Length: 440
Image 1 (tube, one colour):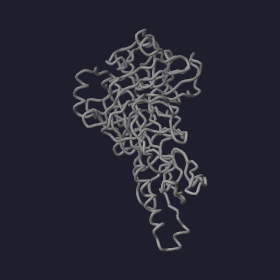
Image 2 (image 1 turned 90 degrees about the vertical axis):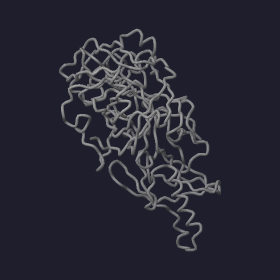
Image 3 (image 1 turned 30 degrees about the vertical axis):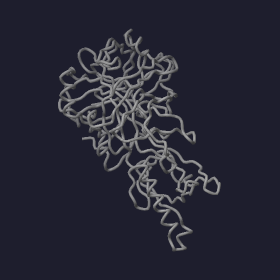
Image 4 (image 1 turned 45 degrees about the horizontal axis):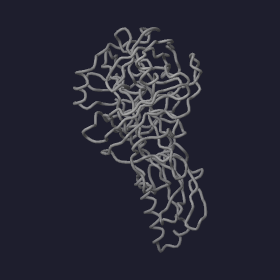
């Protein structure tokens, strides 16, 4: 069953990192997210860094965080659907244009919830959830110049690593997060400083191993000592990511699918996040920013990353959604309230009336939609159907489809037919959805 991450993790707050190779002393969880940093959805990041590249709030599970589901400021050029031609993901980053890392831990493309077995029915969910993900290795966001203790500006990692690489080890020492990466570099350089071997004085480099796509690579980098006495490689890195999304469905044994598209790595690489572990947490809705033409709306909420609020474990991030297992308590609670629906095949979906289930009002409700077009052979499976919000309640509440509602289940003729995935930038009442059989 989807073994992409040994565990997986995530929520839209912005749990990332910025460290030119060591933690900033002011790293902390955001109390709120003011502005989108990256260009897609679930990850809404705080754009306020020392070097102008975005400071990502960091922290550990067990802390409270105020989060926003946000897909950023830039839509992508898309098909015309009477919408002006642009749309945005409304969950996290990465749709089917993103690449997927193929490793021996990867899942088979057919190995989704059903594992190739026909699924006759699922519970439609629609609940908002906090998502926290921790990367496999340390993700490179960018490289930058640093100023050494003598005032000289250098860029040690330039053309050595690039955005989207995952650093795995330093001189054979495995690094799982940014702190381990920083300490490994500084320990090695300290050994050079204290060594009596003059030949080592001239070397003063560290050898890092990293993943680029599915290929393992290596590079030698000469860290720079800055005026704080520590060594830096001039690399912006992050080791976790957080956001808000919507659970689409779950089976009787608690396997769930959410979002309807993948979670991106939050960088300009456009790749899916390569994660080591991940979890779902309950969240409290605190804010709705209404969407308008040219500016998609968004959801804000508070998530507590602790055992008491844990609701599920993630084990797969794919172009078609994120997948995992609900905790037993949540499964029992949800199943007592939610409706079990038959699953509709593509041939059963038709234009006309449908409903979307969402918790955007603070409670689970159904909102009226119109399916305006169906593309059964869509190359972008996240856009298999085009839809229009017709419910005045939802338009009044949020302006239509907003970021954070990606994954909201769609019901038609008493069956679950898919999930909402995109909003049109020029018209927040319109968007796209994925067919349910694609997610299954």
